[in-house]
Amino acid sequence: MTAHAATVAFAGIECLEIDVQVQIAAGLPAFTVVGLPDKAVGESRERVRAAFNSLGLALPPKRITVNLAPADLLKEGSHFDLPIALGLLSAMEVIPQDEIGGYVSLGELGLDGRLAPVAGVLPAAIAARAAERGLICPGPQGGEAAWAGGIEVLAPASLLALINHFKGTQVLSPPEPRIADDDGAAPDLRDVKGQETAKRALEIAAAGGHNLLMIGPPGSGKSMLAARLPGLLPDLEPAEALEVSMIHSVAGQLAEGRLLRRRPFRNPHHSASVPALIGGGQRAKPGEVSLAHLGVLFLDELPEFQRAALEALRQPLETGRAVIARANAHVAYPARIQLVAAMNPCRCGHLGDPALACAKAPKCAQDYQSRISGPLFDRIDLHVEVPGVSPADLALPPPAEGSAEIAARVAAARAIQAERYRGLPIRTNAEADGDLLERVAAPDEAGRRLLTEAAERMHLSARGWHRVLRVARTLADLSGTERIGRLQIAEALSYRRMMPGRGR
Image 1 (tube, rainbow, N blue to C red):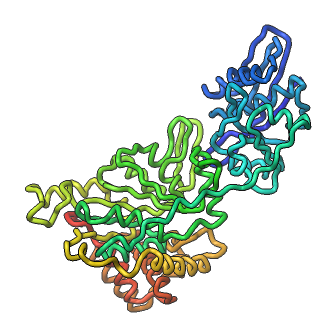
Image 2: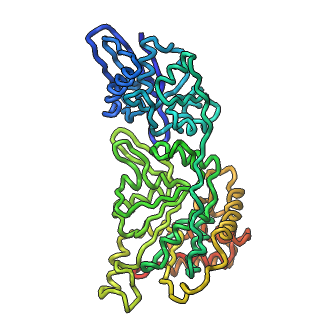
Image 3: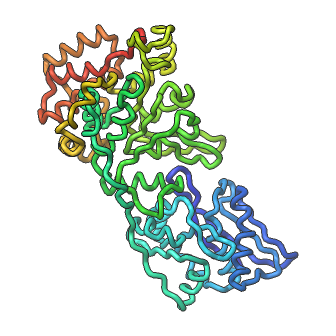
């Protein structure tokens, strides 16, 4: 007799159905797992054996073969423990086959039979719903699986509790959906004194989802400004929360199985490698660019990042997807991010200040800024200089306008965009392209004439032209006007200035 249990393997956030086949046959005692398992899956036989012993169950002294079908697909992760154990229990006639046939299961077994959390419960639950099956997962992640809706979710704390549920001696209560607690109010822009131009650029970036680069000396408030951007952004919509949480679930970073409701803000160190930033590694996990999906990726000290890592950002910034190429498969993760970067104008950081600048200026600025390629620089919508804050500004009282007032204007502009792009796979002006961009961001005659003249003088690329139009569209939304005029084009062009020390 061959028993069957259903589980999944992950290809990005997509789930591939895996049939766990368990056969107990006559022969010398052995426990073999086949079907291209990795080391974690191969070791599951020892965890399953120890868990059975803790429950007082002895494996029969026969030849036990576990096949993970399809056999030519690499199986990775410890979540195969539970379906292998359920297949064994069915083959041993402890649990009837028809009891487990209607479920997709995943979970890691401890040596004492307890179930430990695993990555990917949320996408597995959604896949189970599509297959019209229930889901069995570790107890702490029941609230995560419950968000799939419309399926039966069993979330036992241990293998014994699950066996008792199937035997009718214990009833597992259906878990309730759980959402992440608010981790407190974001820092307020009222804390930033001066820097009115940078605050305006931050507001525009938040309203339209635009990429932003801040250039200024050390201590001018670049990181302080970036940390206050999440306080200007609206919370995730329910569909967006599900989309973002699926990525964090696959990465194993969904704390206590709670769905996210705030937009991600990822701040990797400049020593991050290409796999850490874009994704990859042995199990092709999502990188920072995908973990920041529908949120903010903040890169401080931009020129200090590895050149290869920065260049790898170009495709996700353009397409909204991070594609990880492996020898046997291509894995794609969503990566629709808002890039916010900060940098010093040169290595010493004091270019233009005779009292503090090093003796190598201005050549040091050219060498330092050349670490950022032109194509990457061209993909950033807003370039703003953040000068040092003067003692006179520091002595001023806090500004009257803080994050709450700016966030209200951002929310109003985003509501206009939501209505404009209703029914389209677009959320903000930063994503508009092609004919759609020409239609929604067409300037009036005066604005078009100014843009044409400025594009010739500034040598704007076609990408730069379109990004000016996107920023102008956001400026019009912030001011509540439908038509883009000369004023919006002029302000949008003011944010396309070249960095100091970089020639055209």
